[in-house]
Amino acid sequence: MSRTLAESIGGTVRQRSVRELRDRILTGALLPGTRLDLDEISEEFGTSRTPIREALLELSFEGLVEIAPRSGVKVLGVSPEATIDNFAILATLSGKAAEWAADRIAPDDLDRLEELAGALATARPGPKMVELNWRFHRVINQAAGSQQLLSLIRQAVRMIPSNFLEVMPVHDSSEHDHLLRALRGGQAPQAREIAERHVLTAGKSLAEWLPGRGQ
Image (cartoon, rainbow, N blue to C red; front, side, top):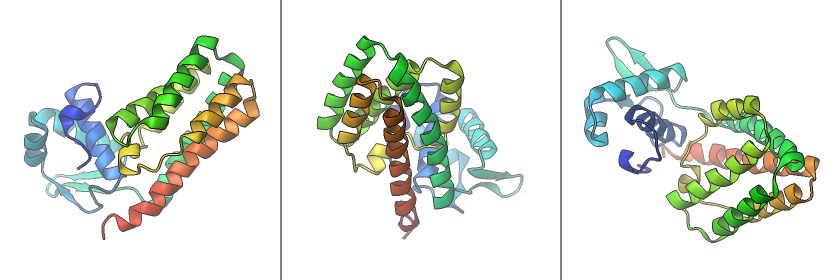
């Protein structure tokens, strides 16, 4: 498994449970057809049944699990095609955020991005890299200056594994440098293109890797 519940980043027990279970499904650690036992998950996560039950209900609304009265909970999973679609949606939104940020970002935010890009370039695959990557893109998304866009990004990112860089540690730090240069130069079209390609490439890598996960 990717990590324990205690090592998940922030949120309530229910939110951390949702994130951990969602990550396992989206990365194929929990394969389609797998039956989930409420008691086993509760014991593993060190919590009561209530937040786990609520987490599974949320995942059922997202189409990742199926809850049947007599059959229990079954993982539906996500296909490679759906994975690419999910990343494509996020790529479009991230590209627009980078485009707007190129015109609106403050000098202090650019300095912060340079610091984060440097840390990412030397970070080893693991939770630290995941955190640094999240913070880097969060600065850009906020610099776009649109609460509506931020809200859409938050919705889209729910269907992206939060532990992607742990599962797929292939990481090209130069993409962050290229994006940073475009933002510093106020090159909005280039920033949008780089950001979109960055996310799409990640999605294609995961989609190509998923079919072999159950072998």
